[in-house]
Length: 361
Image (tube, rainbow, N blue to C red; front, top):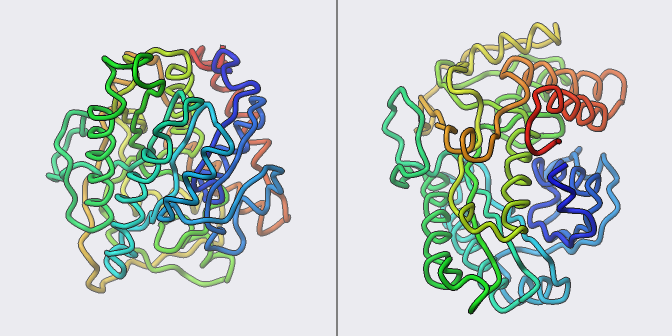
């Protein structure tokens, strides 16, 4: 996969104990990479990282600690850095806006600062969010050239992270100076609402439903008509890894911003997702909340035509299949104490091969 580019490469990941981070470590180790993690402990119990029992060197640390981050990257001397550490929740950002901006904005600054001058670093991938865009509630997808924005502190902090990425790309990692004054190419990746087994975060639709079901109670869902770009966790990770392959190869035209999301015509509301979940786990019971909720976008969609055409990237699983696989992961975990990560990973790779995708040839 990925032209064998990650074999024996040294990969530094922030946020590796998180939901997406743990799946990324799992995949990179399959590719033969040496992974080093920098993260706080997972805030949930159980959590996917601990369940996988992955063997890697890592330190428990905060990305706001610039000196510790600099030392970790300087000592490890990575070839590529994936920055996933974040305060990832909209509703939490209303409760703790200062921490949200510190982690998501200044944390991004710290990553780039820590990488400057470390000559081993050839690529930096900053993972932000589909919510970085100025949301206008329109019916078409946001393109990478749309203005950054953000109503709530979380969305604004991710928009700020994107602006910081572009500023550092222009000021310190300028493409015209690549291999002259610096050796690194940097990019940002914006993914849709990522679902999959192993996520137990608060205030996320599927984890909330799963936790309630495991406790034999109904879950109250908010914003039932809201539409999100739902996608299985391996979809955006394939995009991140594909971009990383290009940057490690020195292809500077890929040092840009990228969207990764579901097929353009696929749209499911929150209510439709919950109904779809009930097909695979009959115990799921859902009530619609009538209480007043903090503002969240109602309609959010990504235009991924840039990745489709320039990277030959596209989703492997439909939204409904992604929901099926996610529910089955949790159902098997709670009913049979099984971790289905490896089996689902292998099935995903086989399906990608059947589609003839470039990264899996």
